[in-house]
Length: 274
Image (cartoon, rainbow, N blue to C red; front, side, top):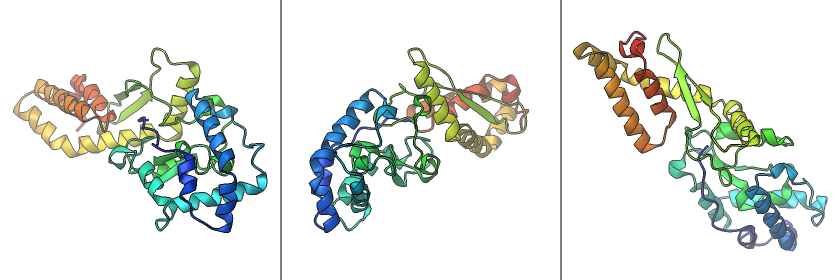
């Protein structure tokens, strides 16, 4: 998971952009209550205690939930003024890379707390996160009540880089990588459980293993030539140099982990996986 900057505006600005219409007037009439709910959301988010939020807000009648959900369509519609806020949130993901899987392209804004259950947060900017379709399909509208299973939030969770990711490879054809999360100093039991759940539920081992495998497939002839023209040290040095280059880029942190795992292995550097 890669942390993102929080949206540079609040829900009041979004509501003001909705324009007119009978349903929108109902939303505008609830502006003060929605703004108050946004403050509750931000306070709870800073403590990573989303499971403590009730699906109901006493100040907002259940009958208005549909109107609040409808308001979100004004943000999605490319012909509406509110679309500009959608676009800004979408742009928060650098290079349009999904902050959850770091691999696929963003394609939607996810309601971190699903609008199906939390209608009052349907247009709260801090509840809208740019992610890819695949990650969005995993999250769906699930209502999480266990803090150990609470999804990571790119605006409020910061894992301090990717040092938590570790991996090694299986000795066999194409030396496939197997990744795993490792607990870091200072992490609570809750945070580590959430990271493990994030890793397994999104299928990151499979995704990143396929990605590192694709790199190896694209470079296998060059590695074999290095070994033939030099020796295993030539291959090891090339892998370590490539890992340093990927570290500097930072976009696919699982690949340098694979490179260093391969470089540590004499078996691999002798191209016995080919």
